Image: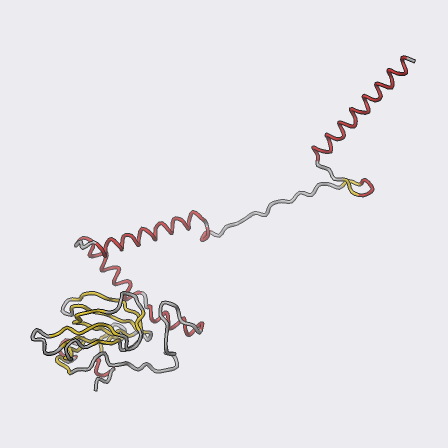
Length: 250
């Protein structure tokens, strides 16, 4: 009797140990039972290899951003600090912005391709369908004709006369030029440039959009204060042409 009781206790202990081992095994293996107690092999999902294009790598992007910021800072210092040592930097920057990148021309191309102009240069007319007509910058008479210097014409006007843009475009230069004083250069969508010099006041900003017949500035008055004078030139490509042949000042 005693022996039978001992055997039963041993069987219970063995059964309890077997149940505990089974629970531990199922927990560690993470095995899921399907209907009819069928087992299935665990499915292993391999993570897809992510490839990043070199142009969109974070390190490259941050490096390019840092270089661009340094370049902008260098140009800002060059134009703000009146130093002769930085004059080559200023000249190079102005040359690149004036000659190598055609703001108005790119805008015109964009409009032809996509039917909508860039925000930089809104257009009030379809230059590919309507022939450009130029407005008169200011009324006056010729003091020095184109043959005098082969670049532009010096006009005499009324005192404090307003000078207007002959056509829409982008002001690619606003500053002082030798022998011309305060000068504004506007680049037009057809690739031409109009120059306005000898100005007492300037009303446009560098790289700002200028509408046709928009005020550019005010003429410089003569020493006796009886009349005003301003310089006007017209450029096609790299060649100056006689403004009288392009614009009717009569």
